[in-house]
Image (cartoon, rainbow, N blue to C red; front, side):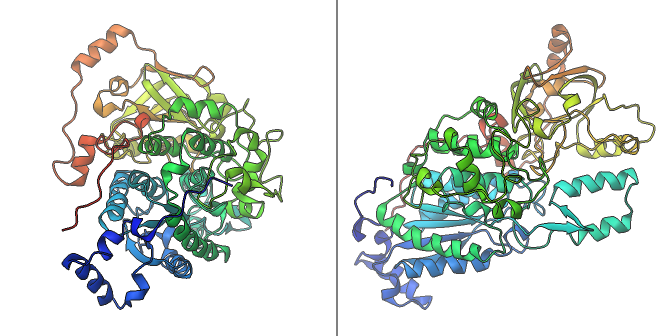
Length: 581
């Protein structure tokens, strides 16, 4: 049991600044609330709970969140609170172009300012699709009022012709098979309507389940909430329980700053590595930690990856899906198997310690949830995250060696370099292209500033003629990102990126690139004098955007190793509550 603070008095709630005053402003706030059909006794004297909802008809991952918001509000009413639903940007991964990452910081700002500018004492945050989790929590951490994260949950298992199919993972797999001529267009269309069977996030361990599981381990969700499938009856029950609990958290004044410290983030890293999670989490965790005033680096992640093997047998590293993970015991069962790596004393949103929450968390399928003695991928074979440095990536690059081809983990090959994905795709499908599986495919200008927004372009396509020869992997390098549902020998997040003058900007087609994952290095075999000459000749491209949010993004975003947050948002400087006159 965590230490409980003295229960707060009603007069200490921030919403009272709006509703309790006897002046004209207080009159207006009460009057307008009654204008919405609320009786005075339904909101006066109650904690006001914001229900931040990222539901949208453009976000299939969040298609059920309108109903879940009602469940949250039911719980708030039952606990004596006054729930107020507020919509927020949905950042649905599939439909938003050029990339949802361009808008992660936008949603973080929106969440923080929604909470600050309204009479809200606590909040339940409804999200789940990739960027929504870090975005909502970055905003909530900066605002630092009581919050619970209510994750959308993974979609139902996919099935096609008797085979399990996972969102993202099998899209990529069968796209390659289509291009290789091994399946027909009719097969492809049939697969299209059968792979994703319900609302919810990707049913593989992509970025969505990686991030929700991490924040679950950090103590920001109700215990085990991240594993509950979106369409399971337990999901609305969990949402209602969030509503009940957040009211008590307001009275207890249990805030993110009371839950999050370096140990909490390290607990999150244990979940990250044991899951075989998405490389995208490396960017998001640094950004979240900086909002919380916690020192967390790529090197911390690499250190944890060297201790905790991939233990969850779910695509893309395994052979099952997230619904199977849930029925095997879910995140709590996984954490129980790795409890010796955790700080079990850390508090969580339910008022218990992490250790309390893991008591009795049994595993019901030891093939789906493995232990250190029988991992899905032994550490000697590969890790969830590798951090590489060298003259191509002085500040770091990342890769998931557990999803890469062992033969490419130490490799030297000539580069073929592309400056944009359109030219790359056309060129790589040219049957006369001089290329072999030893060639290193490079895409630059895909980083935070260059794209902008660091899109998931990093799983670069295998040339069509090589696919027809049976090639399914090559060494690929980018300053962009890759979907967590994908796989392959892809070096990502090269920092500093090409657009700001990083060494990737100086690489030329034909240069030899040397990758040594065991040594943690990525280098171009180019004479230093030649590098100096190329740097002197390099000129940055003009910004793609002259106005709009994207222009602000390009001017203020940090590099991948720094979390891609805005320079004016990271840190813990106090922002005052609004003046009310």
